[in-house]
Length: 283
Image 1 (cartoon, rainbow, N blue to C red):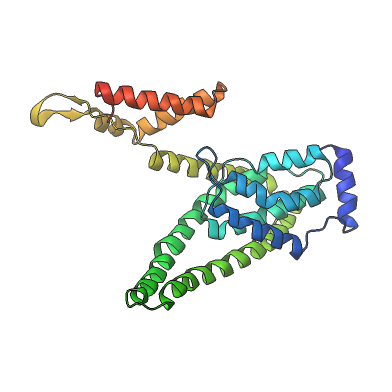
Image 2 (tube, one colour):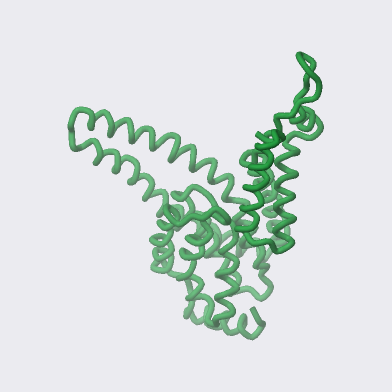
């Protein structure tokens, strides 16, 4: 964003022309429901996240270039439990607002904070909503439905969705208040650079954990025979745990850095899997 544009937006903000209101936050709240069905394999919930942020972006930024830059920020990889995604949306709204108010706001911190929060919140949200609340709602609804009671499916929907809607709403409002209040203090104290750095480190830790957990490379080959045979996979993991998933992720990252298309990379992965399974060095 140019200095002139920043000064223009700052003047508008001071005149309350682009100040964020509860009505704007509610627009983001309603759009956040797209997290439930908009999903892709490359960046997962990024499109619904950007769609949710569009009312804020349109209000804060006045030129096409500014809006395109903001949308690009929110089209990065994003994935967390949909029911509490509004907490991060609220914080992102406050950070975008701070970007308009401040002359030296680091916009990279917006995505760093998103990456840093989405992993821990997913752990909490998945455990509560999918692992606990859904099980309770299903147990109540199923027991009544088996008796032919129409209240079965109704109670299931109520027990699961009423808490979910309340959490989604209050997370949206709390995220914005938390972001707006805390970020102003951080900005004035000069700690924004430290926060950005810390969020980046946390984000890398989350990505590292996802790599070890979600990428699987099975090598069935063994060295030796009989009881003395040792699996190559065990030897490699003894050197560096999870070295094969890490190496394979590094290979994919190398292809991306060489501007390979996502579809091309998927075809390469499929070929490696088929050839590896055929010759027996992958399983």
